[in-house]
Length: 247
Image (cartoon, rainbow, N blue to C red; front, side):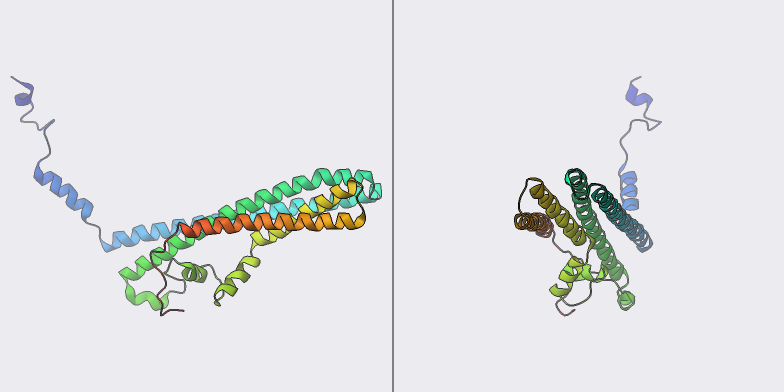
């Protein structure tokens, strides 16, 4: 007796029949409105938790940087009193300030990643709100946040005051990354000025070197931020843009 005949009655190793295949496909294709709502709600809460983690990390990193900067300033003040702003003070400043600047630059880079993460979470949540409105269009009047994933819609969800580009500029200037940019630039200017003073430069030259260091650091960080923003915008296409009739 062949193996085919011996297993003919058991169905082992046999190809599934058309009825079984169609039944499985029918089960996979049957997605009720309740299931869709559950999937969207789960993703919504996941994005909300992820955005909260991004905010917490931004605050903790910025707090760590400010704590380090405060400790360095206190240490510099103590050394200045002990050395009467002599050679020991300049040497100590040239050792501790670059460390603080490194932490500041690392904080700035990490804040950029956290902001990008938050923006993607806002885009995802706005798209999910659009899906909610597709399931229940009559609920639109109850929504406070936006269901559009373009810049105006993101601005509504992120709490940017209405007013166009001016409000976006104010939002960026008041943001934590901008504050970190300014602090990093000040530290870079101070390092350059102390190095010039250490080299025996005159007071006017030292002041000019410090201002130049501030400007160079600010321009480098701002250029890096603008390039990253432009890169993200060029690769992003809104799926639910704000209608022209809406403000």
